[in-house]
Image (cartoon, rainbow, N blue to C red; front, side):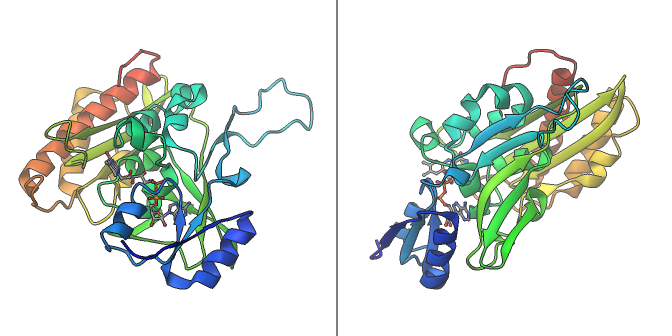
Length: 305
Ligand SMILES: Cc1cc2nc3c(=O)[nH]c(=O)nc-3n(C[C@H](O)[C@H](O)[C@H](O)COP(=O)(O)OP(=O)(O)OC[C@H]3O[C@@H](n4cnc5c(N)ncnc54)[C@H](O)[C@@H]3O)c2cc1C
């Protein structure tokens, strides 16, 4: 283990100052379930941990429904879900609004590590760690997530789909950190789903994971988003595969076409957890499953995780 200093940020500005003064070896500490392991094994040089868990902005968890048509004039609440970057996963998947409107997020965050890990680990940490196999990132991509980021240069928003730039690398600049994650409110007839394949429960790193969001007008798909994990150097959005689903019913033929197109779009490698061919095959299977599950949820059916 390296010699580490610890500082608890008293405000967002204080966190920026600590990161700026600490230089490259200053790291944001959320749950620490990746960072402490990496520091102990000296896989990452860390001299200063900047704890962001005591900030109101990073601990917010709030859902606002779209403004009802009969609301009084001038009444407006910015609709959607805001998840502070330091909110532990058990609070995310335990939240009734998240359970109702963002099923893919519940499914992904519920399997990260085990109960002890979920008591500390965060969506912000899963995203910032930028592992190609991170479980929550495809779910956040499918749900249209946006990272709200602050730093010495001000504030900005980065779509989750554009956040990871390589294995362990992200679009964050020095001194920048994620304050919260925002998800737009789902359409009224919509559903989402997430699945992963692991060879056995004890082995936590996904061989492949996949997430889908679908919205319908009548029987026709009106909106679609698909994303994959563990099949490319970064989690992979599939905008073209999703766009081909829009404007037609989601029948078996459409699902088969999407599964085949997703398999072709994946760029997997062979490693100790799976071969390239196995991963391509799994992509097709999981995409079919998440599309069927998301569609069933859009129809109002109870579909267990
Ligand atoms: C036993 C075990 C099992 C695990 N199982 C899984 C699994 O099944 N699936 C999975 O995807 N992962 C798994 N993980 C990895 C880890 O738990 C997750 O990636 C977790 O979500 C990380 O969140 P954290 O809050 O602990 O991040 P931290 O460890 O605090 O931080 C991770 C990295 O992100 C940076 N960071 C954290 N928050 C921010 C922020 N707000 N802004 C900018 N940078 C930030 C840190 O500086 C660090 O570099 C497992 C880990 C362990 C130890």
